[in-house]
Every structure is written in C-alpha cells, then in structure tokens.
Length: 560
Image 1: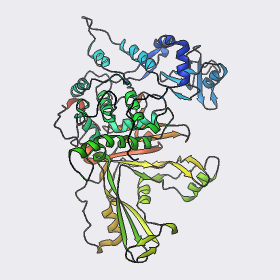
Image 2 (image 1 turned 90 degrees about the vertical axis):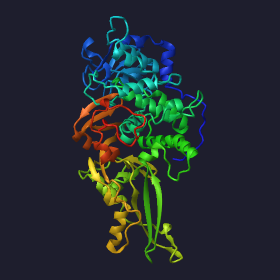
Image 3 (image 1 turned 90 degrees about the horizontal axis):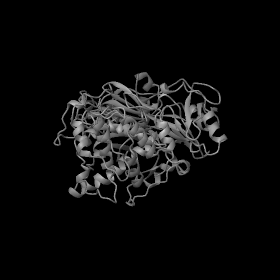
Image 4 (image 1 turned 60 degrees about the vertical axis):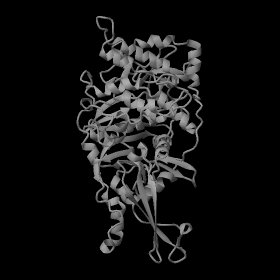
C-alpha cells in the first residue's frame, strides 16, 4: 500500500444512526437499568448475570439455547440459534423502533438493522462503572490497589490520553495480585462495531516479541514524539498506549477506540463501520507506522534500508528469477515484502468447481499443507505468451520460466493464506473453506534463494552470493488469525500461543483452548517468529524490569 499525504484534521465518522435515534428518544435511562444485570468473570469477561434472574428463555419459542438478546425498549428476551431461526431479528422487524438490543452473552449493544455490534462510549462507561463497584474501599476511603489500577483505565477517545508513564511503571511491577491464571498481556479487546478484523490482528502484533519489546522498552515515547500535537494524531503513540494498557495487569476488556479513530484518520478510505479484511488492515497498519517512523529515521541519517520498527520486524526480501528458455539467461529482481501470500495447493478440479458452480462446492476430505503451499510458491512456472522475456543475451523476446524464492527472512514471518477466490470473467467471488495443515515449528531453509538456486543448478555453480548460512531459518508459531463464516458476513478470531498454551481471543472473550482446536481452524494469517526469539521468552514478564537501554531485539521474557 502506497504512502500518501493525509489530512490531519480530526473528523469522526458517524456512529450507528439507529443507536443515535434511540439515545435521542430514550436517553441513557435503560443503560442504568441493565447495568445491574452485568457480571464479570475472573478473566475480565463481561456478561449478563443469569443468577439474578431465571434461566433465559426466548419469548417466541420458549427455548433456552442459542444466543440471547434483550431488547432495550421492552426488555423482551429473544434467541438466535442460526440465521434460519433468528427470533431476535423477528422481534426487531415486528416492532418498529426496537432495533437496539443487548447481547446477553457478551454484554454488548447490537443493532438488528446494521446486523452487527455497535459501540457507544456511554454504554462502555456503564460497564466500567459497574465493574469498579466490585472492589471494596480501604478503611481510609481510598481505593485499593486493584481499584487504583482500574481508575487509571482511561477511556480511549479523542480528548483523553493515557498516563503512559504510570502504566509503564505498572508493567515493570510484579503482578502477583492478579487472580487470573492467564499470562500477563493477555487481555480482551471490545468490539467497537464490526472491528473483529482489527482486534484479531492487534492481538497477534501485541505478542510479536520484537514489536512488544520495542514498545515496552519505551523506544517510542509519546511525550518526545515530535509530531504529537493537539491537531495531529500519531498512530505509533496510540499503539504504544495499547501496549501499556494490555500489559498493565488489568484483565478487564479494553476498548481501543482512540487507536481506531487514529487509524481512520490515517486511512480515510477505510474509515467506516463495515467489516473489513484483516490482511488489508495488517498491511495498512505497518504502512502507517512506516509513514511516521520511517520518515523520522531518514531525517536523522541516510540509510538504504528502512530502520523503522515495522520493517525491522516484518520486512524480508523476495527474489524473482526469470529465465530465457532459449539460451538460459536469467534476470533476477529483488522486492521487499512484509508478508508472503500463498495459494492453497488444492486440486485444479476443486478450484474450478469453486468458481463455476453457483452453490456451495463439493467438500473434500483432502487437506492442503503449508509446506505444499510454499512448494507451490517457489515452483517454476511458465509465463504466458503475453509475458515473453526480452532476453539481454538473445536480444529478442522468448518464452520464459519464472521462479520465486526468499532472499532474506524477517524476524517475524507473516504468511497470508488466500482464502478468497475472485473470477474476473464471471465477476464473482467466493471464500475457500479448504482445510490447511500447518506446523507449529518448521525450517524455511528449503525456500531460501540459495537453496532454490542450488537445487536448480546442482553443485556446478560457485558459492552462492551473500551466503545465508548465518541466518536463522527455524521458526516457531505464536499467533494465528482465522476467518469463519461466509465471504459477506464472516468473523475474525485470533489464537495466541503463550508459554506453549493456546488461547482464543474472540474480541472481549479470552478462553484457553487445546491445540486441536487451532489446527482445525480456517487459518487466514499465520505468524511465526525466529526460534531463538521464541524460546528466550519463556519466563514471566512480570518478574523482569524494563530498562530503557535494553535492545528491542533482545526479548523480554514472557511472551511465549
């Protein structure tokens, strides 16, 4: 994604119009009424307290299964078992003005016209105020340490800033008082209205060891950020605030609202409440970090390679060899990349069937493998007749073979699985629900340029230029972003591997899961980190002091 000048004037996209109409007519009265029904688990998850009432039953079918919604107008409880049995939607359509309800399982607002969660800071404030009443005050009337930590949870809006110094001091302390067994830094992110794509990627980046160490070591200090001002937003500053909040020891779900508004400001074409693509958000976020930090580094010193944290962590180099089939002359080009997009190595008949039939394609029990996808990525392919190479040796156009390889591996390897097939001829798109087997640890050496070229020519060539023997090629998985559902209405979820235990991050929900659940998921983005960085982060982060002189690429223990 290219870098272009952005308008620094702060303009806030309009929230859900149906929620605005509701608040204009009814105010915040019903927020207070449902506040007493909230409860909080030890891991910070917010939900309706069913112990204070009867077991929820649907007003329409009297069923007690599925997802329940409470109408904010009439307090009716209705269910949604599946799209064909959605009594909650039926209630909304049958009663004019009853569009807004509370998701009883998530304690979030839901609009049945927009068909998604909608975010309201005032509703979020009601949730937080309810939570703060859980803890008793000390004898002198001053809040205890847990209350103090909660009171420092600033709302991330356009006018309130986090006390970053206080939060970073909290990170450096040992969080022995935490009741949760979850590792430090594991915290749910509230859905702000179709933002599961953002939350899932943020969870992965928050636990990428080099990126985490950079921000927790205060390498980007918002107070000294030269571009911070009243009228300008700095995305790295907002990312820094999220790191501080997530690693503060607070387990309550966090609302990254200020970051969302800041990202909207820097990516105006994506400023909306519609569902977006997690991969596009990942690329856009790195682009925005580079836009700020890369420009600053170039002002300080001249460097051919960008030294911004986004490129130092995620940037690699791809090599493309185009070989003339007539004389064997090879033209090589090198391109930087922050991820590698892989085609699923499914059969040709399955891929054709996927786009040719209007209904669902026939399911197959055959799974693709990640190594198979990488083999397909680095396999030689014959270019079409319209892509003939002008050979510098023959001085004319000839048929050519093209082969991709990896010249330089990044510290953190992001593999993007192409799950959305597009047919320009038939003008249609469809999701590929093909299962992919992926290893938790593997060696990327077979896909390096040195290995590919040696395999192509054998031992008859001279030692490969720029030998990569000193580069670590072994990687360990630490995060997976998955996509479930259809192309038009899907849901993104992140799985994190911390201390060899997997956790599912479904917006505000954090749950411990077995690795079989992760292996069976429809992976969309897979994040690997160099093995040395993974294994050096096995101790508890809460026991480690934060030194401002610590190198960001010497891992602070506690990520995995």
